[in-house]
Image (tube, rainbow, N blue to C red; front, side, top):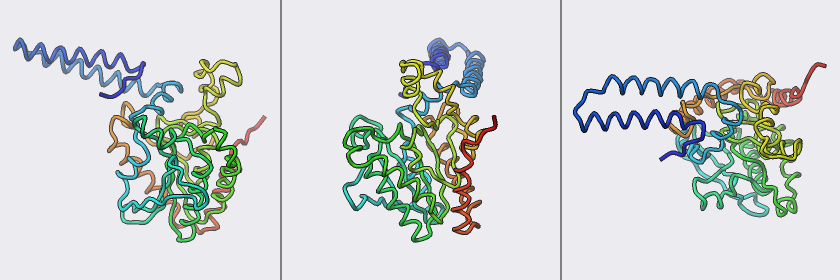
Length: 317
């Protein structure tokens, strides 16, 4: 049974009433089809209106939903012939970042993403989607491999941020992320980045210096988690709703500010309610983006990427 979020409980109540009516109809032989259909229509309309008017904090809950599709779910649904490539060739193989070669409708690509688990055991394996320096170095190795063989790069990002532990700092976490930012900018192949859930801080940006950046409808992309922001500004992490609103972390604002290039619509209720539908929308977006970029030269791709990121943060007093 899928986890029900607090704001979804009214929908659950209507669905319970529908089940009760169906049971009553079956046991008593009464014709309650009209009442059942009315309630089903009300539930669908309520659900649609609810999910079209979510506040940033509610979107965060969906972005963090435990049953939301993970990186390898998307890979298996949109690609064929995936061959995972391991290790940074220096230290170890950080499982929080997974990547390799694959085919998208028969065309070879390099696909890389942050990986979360669906159980405690898997989350421990993938370090809850928080990469260490070795993970960013592995990603950079794969970026360079793609650049050498002229392969388009697709990244799918869902991370609460880079791992903040002492071991990561000892292994130069900041330098590893900074190296990715610099070297991704130099790539002469098309790069498409998708924020599929959480996109927090440099941990996300270390895989997101791209020609095209897209955000799933209920995902978010921010320089700091709302809880972290609230802790700094108000010394109170419970004020994360105020922080999320002020940070403007969802698709409409990010589109307005030119941070992302588009929003990918999710199934009503969120990506976790229909993996196949979500993956189909994701695949179509990637294909369209790569098609728009394929006519550009390596130098044009690099310049477009550079100009895109230099323009971010511009304002008028």
